[in-house]
Structures are given as structure tokens and as C-alpha cells.
Length: 217
Length: 290
Image (cartoon, rainbow over all chains, first blue to last red; front, side, top):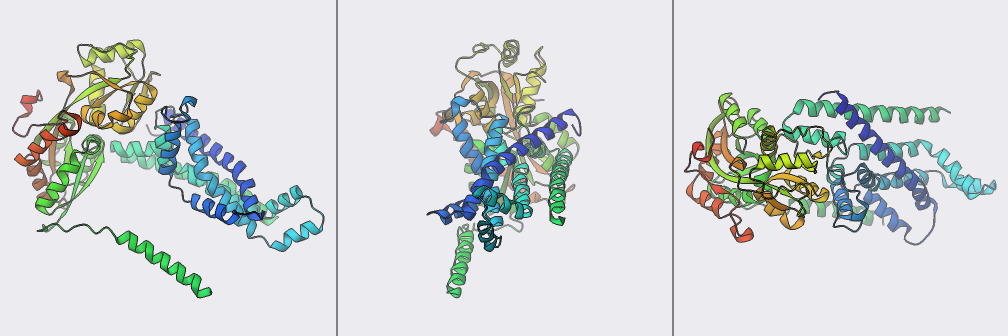
């Protein structure tokens, strides 16, 4: 099955799922990370510790938790989401959103605090200030995005558990590698592994290119 | 204050190290020269819990330390072929024979059998309950276009299922109702339960998972559904690094009187019926194999 229509379909599905999951994580993680970095409220450092712990969440644990929610016997069973790409996206957002949040907070906290004072002094509104800080921290923020994408495109435990590795429906590159290894087709498994690495490289190359172009400016 | 923080870090690291070292394994009595033994077996023996009974007993009696790798039969056979395992406990007679003929296996003994059943939702949308044979049941499922979950992983169960489909007039490949899970038996049963579809399973794994499943046995007792396990030692002439002595010791153990008795009793107290039937005193011909 090397490089035929099915491999193309699996690859495309992997990319779609992980890109969507990363995008959603960014949507949640960027504001939340900013709040954690700049905000002053009780429980902030506790939340930050939670997020930092979440950066190392084992995908299988996330998979188990999300699966228990989505199984027909679970509280969200009526949504009939188990063994669908949506289920994988949900699990992957849970995995990558702490990564994006934690690295966003770290990136913003690494900025010189006097920059904020200066922006305030120049009369910037809150939105303007956050926007300027994001611009200033764009290099580590893009790194956060890359780390978030990397954590989901490479994850297998959650995809296997909530997706079910169902052919033509929820089989992604990592679960296909597990399957082919299980069959003893090590050659195909390695080929898929190389494909996965190549894709991850291409995506990161594109993001790094944007990042470094930003660095020169 | 600076040191307090450092001390705290140091203590944490030590605590973690201690935790990692804590569970020291009890040392068995007389250790053989090469105690590490890799057993490649199918998910069905592992998932049913049979190995949890047999392996510790073997380890205690002989001093070998068994590393059990539970994979599909396809991968288990491949591990034997590539010298990555010392002994195999598998159930795909045709593929096993090919392995023996190619010279990768040295000894092959009959160990036991269990049987396959076709399970599905109680509502039985394809009406297979009471079908005379498994082939007839599959034909009905195909005709009704009811969900059927296949392992699709080249395992012994998958191979058995394909050979049954081969005897029907239907071609399930590419059909929307033919769901390819590409996973082990336990996960495939869960998917079948969630999708309210049919699947072919070994009785042991089904019974072990029964309470979490909304599935019932709909077809059983067909002679075509016998699942026969052999133990195979990897040929040391092909792979000198393999632990042949240990492999032979394990093969003799599982076909020995004590293990055979345990196999026959396994599961009776929990499920009220035997999951496996000991066969060491029988021949392949007794079980309808060539």
C-alpha cells in the first residue's frame, strides 16, 4: 500500500485533524496564556503550574478520558462522536492547548517588563498593548505553535483510543504505523514513519521560514 | 534561601529516583545461564489473562524471566522469523506451517484450542441468530448490509475471518458496512459494541470483556470456528542468539501435565465455563487440521 490513494487519504486526514486541533489550541491558548502571563489574580501561579503540568499530559490518558466521555455509556454519548475525526480533534486540542498556553505565557513573561510600562505610558489601550506584545514575542509564539503541532501530529495513544483506527474514517499516520508494525510489515511502517517525519519537517520549515523572516525585519 | 531551593530540588530528584527503584522483583531460586526469554504471543492469550497464570508459575519453577510480547499472530510469526523472539504461542496453523517449512521454527507442539464466536447486538438486525453455520451468518450480514467490524491486522482471528468470508458469495472489501478497526480484539469488541455491529471474536476475549459490552453471542459451536494454538521454538541454527534452551523449557512446560490442567481450569471460577481446552495429548488430525 506504499504511496497509493489510501496513503494519500491517511496523510491528508492526519494533516487536517492535527492542523485543526493546533488552530483551535492557538485560539484558546494564546488569550489564556496571555492572561496567565500578564494578569494579576489569585490562583494565577496555581493555574500556571497546572498548564505546565498539562504540557506533559500523556496522550493515552487524554484518550482514555475523552473516550469515557464520548462512549455511548458516557455523559456525552448522545453526540455520537466516538470513532469520528471530531473525537480525535477534541482529544488533540486537550493535548496541545496546554503546550500553546504554557509557551505563550513563558514567551510573554520573557519580555522586558519595562516595555509594558512604556506602552502604558504612550497611552496604548489594552488591545493595542497585547497586540504589540504579541508582535514583540512573535518568534517564541511561533515556536509555541510549532510545539503544539508537533505534540499532536506525532501522538498515537489518543488517536487510537478515541478514533479507533478505522480504515478510511479515522486511520491517521501514527495509528497506521502501529497497525503495520503489528502486522509485521516493518517496511511499510518505516515508509509511513519517514512520510510522517517529512510532513512534520515541511510544516515546521514553513513556520520557521515565517519566523525567521520576522526575525530579520 | 538560595540553598533551600537547591536542597528542595535535590530532595525531589532523589525521591523520584527512589520511586523508580522501589519495586524490587523477588529473585527466583536457581537461575539458568541465560534467563531472559522472549515469548511472542497473540493478544488473545494475554487479554484473557491466561498468561498471567502460566508465566509466573513457569518463572518460579525454572528461574527464567519471561518477557511477553502480545501482538497479532502475523507480527508474532514475523518476530520468530527475524529472531526477535525465542518462543511463539500462536494460532494460525497454515502460516505456522510455512514458518516451519522455511526452517525458522525448530519444534512445534499442539497446546490447546478455544473457539471463535460471532457476536452482535441483541437486536440482531441481520437475523443471524440460529444460522446453521458461520458462513451462512456472514452471508446474512452481507445481505443485510449490517455493520461488521473486522480486525484488519493480519492476526489469527483476522485470517480466520477472511477464510470464512472466502466461503461466502459476498465480497466485504470496500463496503461501507465493513469497518476495519486495525486493532486488537479487546478494542475491536469495544468498537463493535459502540457501533452496534457484528464481529468475529475468540470466546475468551469476549467473556473477559463481556460486562463492558452490549454484545451477545449469536453464532457458536460451528466446527469451522475452532482456534488451535501451537507453541513453536525459534530455530537456533537460524538465530544463534536466540535462547533455545529457555524456549524448549517453556514449550515443555505448557504441554506438561500441570500447565495443561491449569489451562483446562482457567476461567471456570470466573465465567462458569472453560475458556481454553488442553490438547497436548492430541494430534492436529484430532482437531480437524491436516
